[in-house]
Image 1 (spheres, one colour):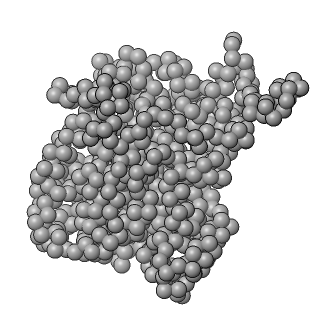
Image 2 (tube, chains in turn purple, orange):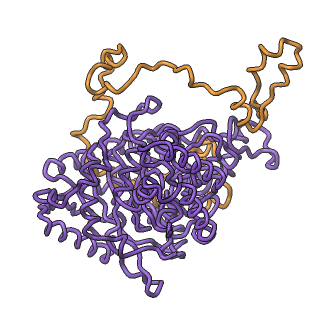
Image 3 (cartoon, chains in turn blue, purple):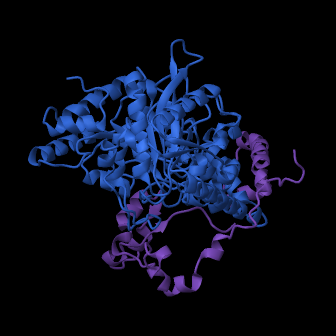
Length: 500
Length: 128
């Protein structure tokens, strides 16, 4: 039986009807990882023994029970930012290269309760800081559509692992676009839920008021399945809210295009300004026409203060990061660099450990954040940025009085070449221009692959284009339904794949 | 370059952040950070006069007394109380530490089991 290119719901059907076992599915992924990952480098490490053990346990549960959780026996990859008890978590940094986590993150605990199969930890930008996965201290991940291009970041390994069929789905994190942008560049679905929907307990913190776990999946139904398994209030994360967690998979299955009649779709003028690749703009406009044909009302809107998004983000996120990364000091856990460096005092130990343990981008952001919070500058930078954040929140709130959902491109460019933006940090930061305001506003958003453009450097090759949908606070059901309807019309998965 | 724009005193900031920059890093940093600060400068134009700061929105007196916990905004919060399973086992602390020593206590001849949950994180000298 051909077990390649399956979605989670397809695997679930096969398992439900006893046509295959989880061990067979898992072995199929293991074989593919061994063949393909040396080229794509999506994973930092795998644990095939654990995977097969998880699969065997899942098979026993399936055998004994008529009903079992959707994710039972499903092999997933996990961004190396989620703590798993007894396993290494490096956050793609040298400063954690020997860190074995003493506890499970809530997301992992819930996945274990759902009997998932752990395939391995995926590569990422160090401490989730980056938009290309080039900031990893360990390796560069390649885009499955073109191995000379980046998969996006910071969850690039996760997106590449789904896109090249090295897992059935992946969990990543999104602080300024780090799930949606790589999903867009790799031609897969990426969802960042409302802030507070998924617990951040056990997720290595970058910027606590922006971080959110997200899902990267082959299709919208898979994203709904993965979201349902982990979402919900957690005592251990006081920023989670007691939201009503709906049956997202059932809602997606019932999504019908008749729901588009009269749906007000907002198109922000700011998402179509200079800097957007015209070919990407065309693909997004095609979706606008498609929605019009289905009966939706297209409304031009403006989110005028989103022009400050990247500036506000790079003050807030770096400030919060400078605080969150203080704990990496070489004293209680992680790497310590002292013996070979002639370190004489405690102060030198801190400074040397952090100099050698952190990469360039991490240092850059810690310095920026420390500056923005320091005496004399706090009001002008952090406080001002926090107030500007409220302007952005209000832009979205006001717009959602007039429209039901907002759409635009996820990324201003298709996947760029490896090395292309590394010498210009600011141009790298601007790759997140459409995704960042969503984190600032605590809203849910999804990137859906809706087409391709020709690859200028690879004859006959194509590069995926992602559509970003943004819905009001705590309306994941609406977001997923609209995404499903568009997905059914576009049929991206039937037409395109990475062919690797 | 805008002369009104703040310039980062990198030497001061690295002291605050306890983060040394090697020659490789510091050469580029001033230039790159300058460019980024130029960009961030646009926040100056934003008109936030009608926005209340977060501090203005918090109901401090009721929050402290616990009365606020029953109201809409805080209903998902709990009191700041320690949960019993929140601390790490001593062995976990020891196994994670780069340099940890329990020996000083063991040599004292004091009853071992009462001393087993003590030890030191060994570091270089603190006072210069």
